[in-house]
Image (cartoon, rainbow, N blue to C red; front, side, top):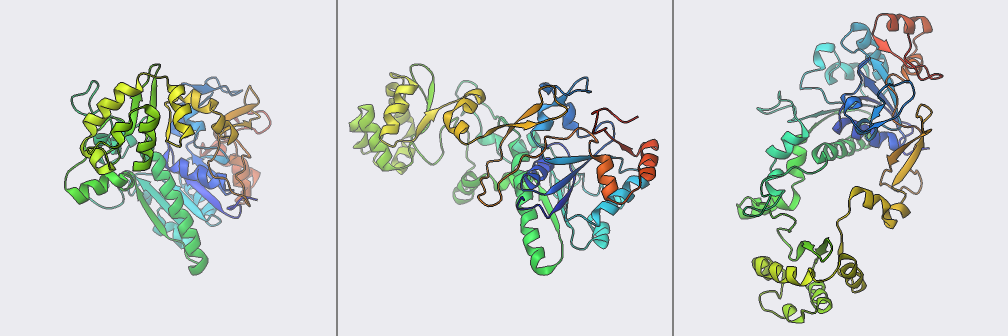
Length: 418
């Protein structure tokens, strides 16, 4: 039994931030019902290639969709119809959490906003994820990860510094703002569940991508608030620690992450540049930050004389943090990642291969371990089961199907119901 096996979630979100939160709750054992548009489903189902081969589907499922929707059940339901809205209200009566990422006010016209649904279930925890939040001059704007990375300041500190080849602001190579927002939403939901244990009441949670990314600027935002100066791009160098950056080796690149003065001295001894450890320009981290250009230039000349593997072997032996710059394939081949079981194969009855690759949840819980019970569902795969649990008869379900309010998949054949 998972830690949240007593919890039911209505996941009315799509793309990444909301589904990421829903997957986290599902991994922890919650029964997560993913509400999707009939025929089309979550937008990310079409965000490929690459595709995973699925029997009965000409195209297959996009890897993007698969990354954020395991352990969920899919209900394909048209919430713009009165009948679909009635189904949502009936499900809300027995749900603990509702996740949604519609535009501000988008669900109010359907009577599916928090104020309406808390009348049905006062214990409901309703989490709204938007680009800019429920208030402020940008509240009505749509928000996307790339846009937020730019507006929050993240791109201004990411990329090569001015004057270097390839200089210019860069986005992070994954939709990091969405992921962080999903994690903050999960934390907020769990906090609301804990509060409900005391009060018996649910609550509304307002989470904005813009807020999250500004909060997650961490030391860089505090660097600005304390100094009054906006940090700038430093490439792979660190604004507060030196040497803490990438260096070219004789056969590639490596990361050197010296975190204190003792580690710097150890590095200098191992690299054969003992005099640098006693150089008055580099005695402390603050001095090394002030003189980063001369120190980095000197170290670059030293580090390029040996291979990456040679440096890592020798520096790890004296406890100086360092490492290679892996491709994603190399990361999954790393013995540490393999030992931690970060690559999974989840049985998938509709896959031509019989299973689906997945990345493990990084949480290792001793008493309620993460379970990987089901892969990301086919569109409408659980529609009929969910509606039966909500008290609808076969006749009512078939009527909704004939009206186009729902779509469903045959659990026996994996084909769209006619």
